[in-house]
Image 1 (cartoon, helix red, strand yellow):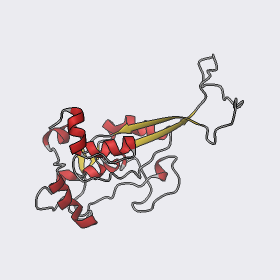
Image 2 (image 1 turned 180 degrees about the vertical axis):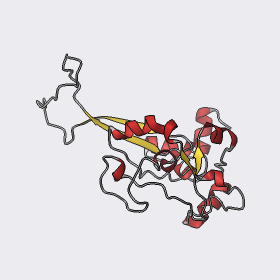
Image 3 (image 1 turned 90 degrees about the horizontal axis):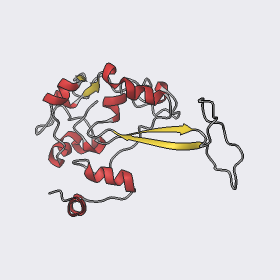
Length: 197
């Protein structure tokens, strides 16, 4: 679901790939390097790919790909049965709208602190449609499977992580910095560094 919630606005998709840096020379997959010159690593993960979906949630992009029951918290991470599907309805009973180019162009969500605080509703997460300031049925959306399929194809090739929750209510800049640095940076600190006002 696409909630107008920057607490999920830059939900990262993390894909892990295991490979060796040495090629096989035949155009196929790289040869597995088991020699470990020095101490062998504890993991065979060689690459970490992070895709940040700015102003989108994990649910709006992957809620239709994932198949585990909402709230089931699967312990695996390989394939659609290892991530939670988006709920069929939000707490108000609204069904998700189709998130396509037209929906994105005509129904911009408000990521301001005031709107998101109302929508979060004291942690109940139940007022995305009904909040008096900014509630809207357009805040609950699932990406069109035909459009989002390239992301689903990537997810099928690696591990998928959907447990990143941003620590700051409001626009995603501070949350992006928190993800990148594992340290909170307020907008007041970022503005002079970037020239933003």
